[in-house]
Length: 313
Image (cartoon, rainbow, N blue to C red):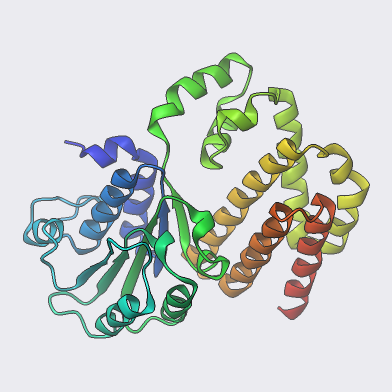
């Protein structure tokens, strides 16, 4: 029988189960969802799967000794870091890091779950960053947050980002998009990129298809010929994507593509450092645009940064 979180988040639970079966579990994840309860449920489900004594195709049994004790927060190799205060400071992060440096007591690995990770201060996030970059032993870190924009870019570039589907609006929104002529594939892209109805309300299906293709072409150029990507910003993109709502959609879709690239690099353990650097520059470019640097200049900054990354590799 499927658990509640498996029914609410079938795509993510399937994805995580497959990484466990394939032994491709990353060292750090960020689970982001508007519904804090669901995010915690998914984090708990994943941790139980990592330590389950009776796994079924990567899914936790929820009944074994480990699963039950993890649910009761009574398993020594799993630490939940949370706070009722407004922020999560260095004084709380440091002891957690020290504990994670110890060997597992009942298993060969350990797990750290940081709840409400958006509460991390810059100092505590930087302290955690060093741990994420070079964990001691077999440790999986899971950050839970309702908003990824509150997380430092350097943290975002070093974790696999899993965005929970918003089940409240999905069915109505998807039905409306289908009525307006959006393909099933494009609806899936919109959902994965977390583009809401307010952004897509005035964007026809044909316009979105053109925007998507333009972006995919430019994203490929970034990785293969960043000099041409730089030229295309002024020659083509800035002319076609000239309204701020369109630009916001562009950034959301671009973030989705970079997130996919980072997840793939982490799973395959190929070009991971290069991809992490690329994600950091993307996040910086997006921050520039949000701070009213022009769309054209922000994209040109990203293209130049990608050229520098590729030259170093």
